Image (cartoon, rainbow, N blue to C red; front, side, top):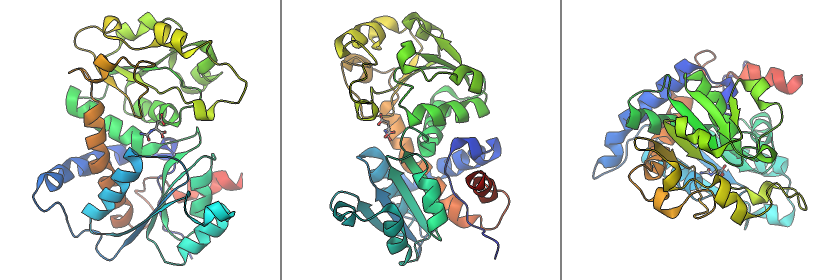
Length: 323
Ligand code: NCD
């Protein structure tokens, strides 16, 4: 039987037309979230499972709410407190949840490739909500939505992604999606936190001088991701020094620039508190966009059945898996 499921696993698999369609659908959901009764019957009778093996506030809350706004039945499973604590493997957990016949599984997991395995081991459409330092595609989509809403365009927008790119799945998804939509991406940070070979692989520019953020329309700040750093590896001499050299402070910004951060923030490390709370900050807008964009992704996966016109061609993913 032909597998007609569609997944959102990585931004590298998504086309510009897919992104356009999802951003447009998301804009259409804005009025739903403003209404008194914030619900549409679109996914009534469908089941969405959210399976989170890593900490999350924004992503898990917005996926759950997005599914509920669309009237789906939602089951949210956190690894802590589930049978994962008792040693159940990812494969067994997926096949257990698959027995409830979910239409969509949203998964966050510390291991690269976990979402792709979930697609292999279940019968559901799968959305990657973050796999290790690999990909976080819905973050990229909501960031594109936020940039277009504020700046009115995507093509030609200059973005500086600042900080711990090495451990960041957000950076990897954003580089792919931003370039696809014509944004001009520069990575700014200490060489120890920039993945080797990334300029050659993707065509981004790299700046080792913090002053380079002055050229950007959008300053996209990344968190220092201690949980993904190898024990004993000192990527930066100290957080204090990192903050003083690379921290995005009001002094380093020029009028007209906007600042973004995927959250959670380490205020006073990668971003100064007054910058986070300033009118240049789009951080609140990013959180709001997360809801409508995730509604759009769930809607898109469920309402465009069949092979072709897909978010992530399953065939392509399957080929890569087999290779
Ligand atoms: C990001 C993540 O988990 O990848 N957060 C998020 O989803 N908003 C970024 C981070 O943890 O720094």
